[in-house]
Image (cartoon, rainbow, N blue to C red; front, side, top):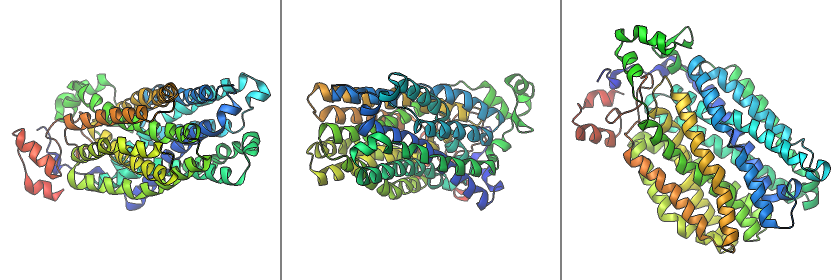
Length: 488
C-alpha cells in the first residue's frame, strides 16, 4: 500500500480533550436542532397542521397533504448538500457549519410566526413551503458536516462511541420536540393548540440555535482538514494545482487518479435504509397511531418520548460495539435483527392496545432507526476520502433521504387509506428499507480505524482494527501487521 495506515499519525492527537468536547457539543447541538426542527413539523403535521394549513372535508387527504409538505423540506436538501458540502471541502468544516445552523434555525423560528389558512388563505401553505425549502437547504449539509467534524476530531480507536454522539443529537432533537408537544397536548385544549399553542415549539427553538451558533464560533477547525496534503493556508488547492505536485506524493497521486462511484453507492444505500425507516417510524407511525388507530394524541407523543429516552442507551452501546467488532459486522447484525422484528412489532402497534403500542414502537424504533443511526454517520465519514468527504457524504445522505424519507410517509399514508387502515404496508416498507441497508453492509469494506487524511475513498482491506477487518485482509491476501494493529 502507498501508506501504512496502521502506523500513520492520528491528527486527532493535535486536539485537547476540551477541543474534542466542544466539537462533540457542537455536533450534538446542530444535529439536535435539525431533528427538532423536522420532528416539530412532523408532529404538528400529524396533530394539527391538517386543520391549520390544509382544511378539507376528507381527513385522510388532509394528512396526505400535510405529509407532502413535510416531504417538500427534502427537495432543497440535496442542493444545500452540494453547495455547503463543496464549500466545506474547500475552506473547512467550521465556517460552513456556522452558516448551516443559522439558516436552519431562522427558518424554523419563522414557521412559528406564520399566518394560518383561515387568516390569509392559500398564501399560508405557500409561505410554509418556502420556509421548509430554506430549512432543508441549510439542513442538507448540517448532519453530514457535524458527522465529518466529530469523526475527524475523534481518536481513531474511539470513533464509534464518539461519533455516536451525532446520533444522540438526532435522538435529543426528537425527544425535545416530542416533550414540548407532550406538554402542550397535556396542558392545553385542542382549540388552544390550534389557535396559538402550536407556535410555541417553533419560536422556542431559537434558544438552541443561539447557543449552537455561539459554540461553533469558538470551535477550532477539524485536525484532519488541516492535516490534508492538498490543503495550503487553510484552503484546498484546485485539481489543476494538485496535478502539478501529485508526482511528488503517493497520497496526492492516488487522490487525483481515483475513480469514484463504489463508495458513494455503498454509503447511499446505508443511508437509504436508515432514512426510510426514520420517516416511517418517527413520522408516519405517529399519524397512524393518532388518525387511523384513533388513540389519544398523547399516546403518540409519549411513546416517542419514552423510546427516545431508551435510545440514550442504545446509540452509544452500538457505537461502542462498532469500535470492538467493526462497522460492517455491526451493520449486518443490527439490520438482520430489524428484519426479524419488523412484522411482529408493527402488528403489536396495530392492535391499538396502549401497552402493545409502546412495546412495539420502542423495539422497532431502537432496532430499525436508532441503532442504524449510531453506525451511519461515522461509517459514511470513514468510507469517503478526505478531499471530497463532506460533499460526497452530504449528497449520499440527502439524495437517499429525499427518495426514502420524503416519499415514504406519503406512500404509506396513501396505502393505509387504500387498504382501510391495514398495518401490513407499513411493515413491508420498513422491511424493504432495512434489507437495502443490509445489502450495502454486506458489500462494503470494513472501514473502522481508517486513516482519514487519505484523499482516496475506502477499498477492501484498508481497515486496521477489529477481528472482521483482520479476516478480510487475510482473505484478500494482504499483509497483516498484528503488532501495528495492537499499537493503534
